[in-house]
Amino acid sequence: MPQYNRQTFDQVMIQNYIPANFIPVKGKGSHVWDQDGKEYIDFTSGIAVNSLGHCPDEIVEVLKAQSEKLWHSSNWFTSEPTLALASKLVQHTFAERVMFANSGAEANEAALKLARRYAVDNYGYQKSTIISFKQSFHGRTLFTVSVAGQPKYSDGFGPKPADIIHVKFNDLASVKAVIDDRCCAVIVEPIQGESGIIPATAEFLQGLRQLCDENNALLIFDEVQTGVGRTGYLYAYQKYGVTPDILTTAKALGNGFPISAMLTTTEIAKSFSPGVHGTTFGGNPLACAVAEKVIDTIADDQFLTQVNLTSALFKAELTKLNEQFHLFKEIRGEGLLIGAELIEKYQGKASDFVKVAAENGLMILVAGPNVLRFAPALNISEQDLLQGVDRLTKTLKCFA
Ligand SMILES: *Cc1c(COP(=O)(O)O)cnc(C)c1O
Image (tube, rainbow, N blue to C red):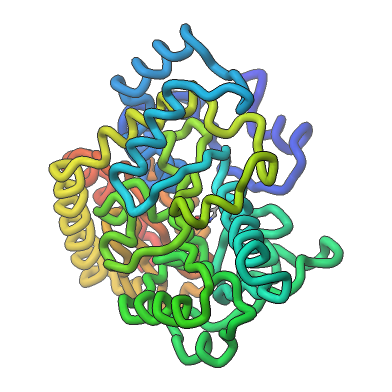
């Protein structure tokens, strides 16, 4: 047995995760190998992170080159990769201004703080209400768990930040009922990820845009999971045709190298004047060099067209599987962020499927207790996809 193994995890790690029984040691493209040399097809991409697959040659090259130039300099100095990445994000989105951080939660923390500060600067302290949605997920800092709509993640940590209202997702009437001129921001995931891959309707997002405008509230899109090509668009807002005031992006931005960004307009960005918010690592040259290459690769019409083709193929295969086994109540999602909700009989059992899939050489995820989540690399080849589907077939057979 290797010196460090799954038992080591139980001995030295804080037990806030329950990782799989196998330990991946190597990845290339959509393939992963564990300590025993067993090979897996990866339909997880490290939770929609390794969107260009594992260790893509062109990114490894950039990482190596930058690693010999400059890793970190702090935000007392800016860097060329930082400016290049920010310029490209501005070029490809609604945004005029960018601030970097290291994780999705941090980008959302920045977005929420910016919205509160913008309201204070422009309207006064009474404008502090944040409206968010039940079952939403925005990260694990105290502010972001409090804003998100899952009490299991926010209870038990003492007093929470105040003036946060949770209402029903995809239900405009419930937003109308609570929004007024004391609201500083509405924060929403265009597709609720962690709670089961639940897409917002276009009317809902359009309605939020209108309600925010009527009440001088900022609309924040949390695109931490949906961003960077995952839905077949660079950002999901571009698919919906609804432009937010603030957008957060993380997961796939560095293809596994930690980096996140908050995008906004020049006007709103004024409220983060010197010293108001900051980070030590955010926007460091190493992370930004990698992310710039990721954006160069994914913000490309041909690349995104291919994502949509792969999505159509994958959904067709899943539909066929369901005609065979009848295990899914619904298959939903956009691009390569796909959820398959299990039928009544298997409610609460999604993680059992994940275990059997691993035995069959396939890595998949859950999104809540009832939904299987598939988030393969955006550039997965048809051959790898079909091989994964084959292993999924074997897996589903065990439950049918
Ligand atoms: C993953 C996720 C986050 C949190 O990102 P971290 O990098 O884990 O902090 C926030 N919002 C959404 C929608 C996510 O999917």
